Image (tube, rainbow, N blue to C red; front, top):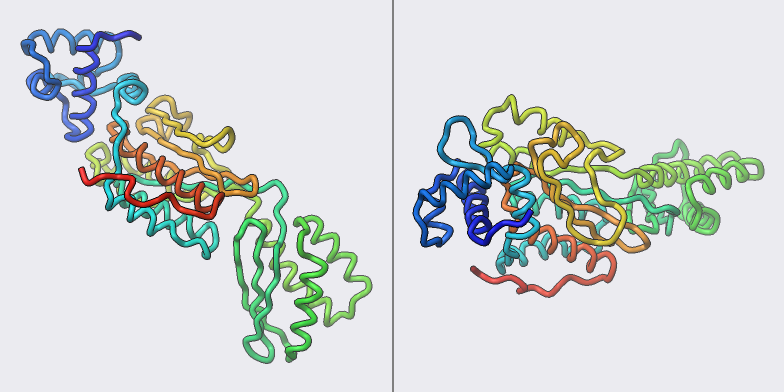
Length: 353
């Protein structure tokens, strides 16, 4: 729809004021904020027109107006200024992401928690599964005579370890031989290929040796199995209670319960394919009933090795879209640089305003 410049300025003033105050916005406030040299009566007429166009809503009998989902959509698409991150925000994000030596899911979890703290909204993260996932390396570390730690590193940089206890003693030589067998026979194999190789090995291996091999290989197969699913994780769900829309616990509870369920198959409309970029779903644009009164803002990033991830924010439709999109964009770009290119974006991109 084509709006006059005055209507756009009025709509923008109402959206940004409502984002800040969570209270319906009246014509007097608009007159002060929009910088228009017209009477409040003229502004009221324009607000009435915007209401008829479906861009504003009038809650109850209040004289003020609030944005509708369509109003937020027009604001996001055409009226919103690009928000500039502060130096403090960029430094805090970089500190959270500067964990290259830690396993992937730990980095993503920490990134989600920091973004939730900065934005005061719940944040979800999701990494896509690699089509062919294999073990890159096995490391075995002796703990005591009848126990050792098996360390499995996958080719998507996930590292898992497990303490394995044996009924009999185990020498350093036996442990080294076991490590050689594992790294020569099971590295570079998919979950199914590892299972087939283990089955073939059972026929021509000594029972005691095969028991050792199978204990470590079965652990490695569990690690690969866990990585083949898309697991949705959420952080900062209680931040919802800080917003007036969710001061009523009966209203907040269904959404909090929905977001708290860590699930294998994501129900959020995440853009796992297609290239990097921002995706904003406002109110009824969300498919899930639990999200009908919320906005979901998502950004995708490149993990490397043909893997992708998504980080997103969930909050009321009265969300500060400019700040959220700026922070998400910086996070996604940082994660892409870190995982895909092995670097972080330079600090100091923001300002102190």
